[in-house]
Image 1 (cartoon, rainbow, N blue to C red):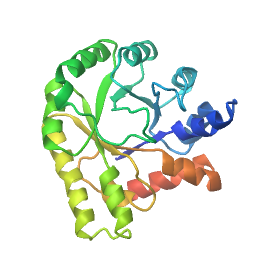
Image 2 (spheres, helix red, strand yellow):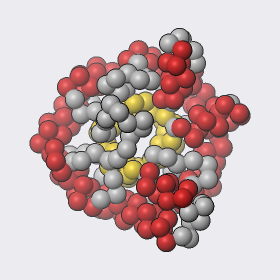
Image 3 (tube, rainbow, N blue to C red):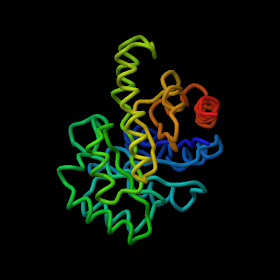
Image 4 (spheres, rainbow, N blue to C red):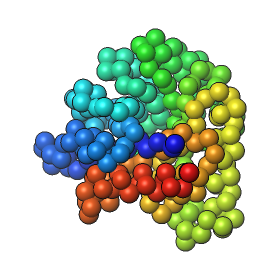
Length: 248
């Protein structure tokens, strides 16, 4: 059965807007689990714009499901991950001026560095994932350097879906969807786990959730946004229901 990892970064975004103590990401992680989340995702950015170090520590202590730590492949982040030991360390590109992650990790340009990082994380007992574009060369490189999982960046699909009025049959949407399908197929052929995420919401998630051999979706902003109106537990339940009913 397809699984849902809930990204709680933007709960911390609201908190940091006032530099206060609420809303607490730990409470969000609890509510997400009660709503059926199979995992909790947190991105500890180098500039600490939302999630803080203590958030990751506290969620790790109380989390009864998988913890996915998104991180840049830097010495500082590797050290933090090796201390906290999340279930999964997901390496992502990171830019100080970006609002959100803008593209996949360029594995081809930093194979030696990433290989060293993966070895350190493996030795500390973590599985390691790459957030990657649906590019067959990048996927091949990810397998070569030792990633256990590839999470396909679904942003281009989501953007096409929005621009074309939510018409799944539109050629542009089909083109982007096919890239995700073919990328996922190659990931599985190379012995890695196939995950996907970024910019998915309650309207566009079904075609992605229906892809064969897809293990997990990681979704955050849409769930936190809906939670403002229905509560986080219900928002997670609604997303999980859409995913599971589509994938069955």
